[in-house]
Image (cartoon, rainbow, N blue to C red; front, top):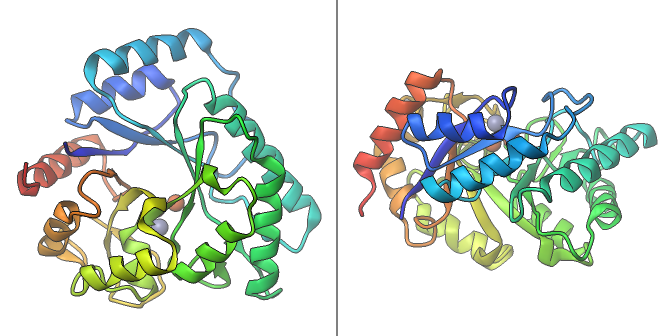
Length: 277
Ligand code: FE
Ligand code: FE
Ligand code: ZN
């Protein structure tokens, strides 16, 4: 089964997102847990959540993906910024436990001159602080484009973080097609090799979700600018291979392309038309 959705605004709650997803032909969605720049989360609406859970069950909405604010930096030099990231992520997970089995994606962080090794250590320390043995939420490390001092621009850095976390059965990876292509993994021309490399370094069992974005800039550009599917350097042929690849085809795919809702509806229809049932 093809599981596909896009990033949606969470401002009207869970039920509203699920309904929107259905309207645009999706069977899952991604959303920000709070204002993407950080800040306080809205109080949890438990009625909305129970409505959402029954609606999703009736209408076949699958595993949803919550995205942490992208301004968090678990690898910051400043202990207050790291503490803030820790508080936000722990609180997000507490809230996500109300929708059991949700995926929670975050950007590993930027070491801002401290070096990759220090960054990796700080990120894994934070994860060791926040992961609880009983949680049903799986935390996903997003593969990054390697912009500036971003950590997670190659598979080895992600693997090193996972290895330093004791309860790492709660960790997985979200592969962003634009980011990895930008970061030097050619998913357009050498998809098999990239996935073999992923398997060798991290292990494909960790791969839990795909951010499906075309790339405005060329291979290895480290720019991280998303394009609509088929309008960037990966191209429609590339995505036909990506969504049908045996190692990827049963994962959930989340669009983060520059689109409004009608644009997303078209893009989802396009992807469905090239998915081999
Ligand atoms: Fe992201
Ligand atoms: Fe992404
Ligand atoms: Zn991006």
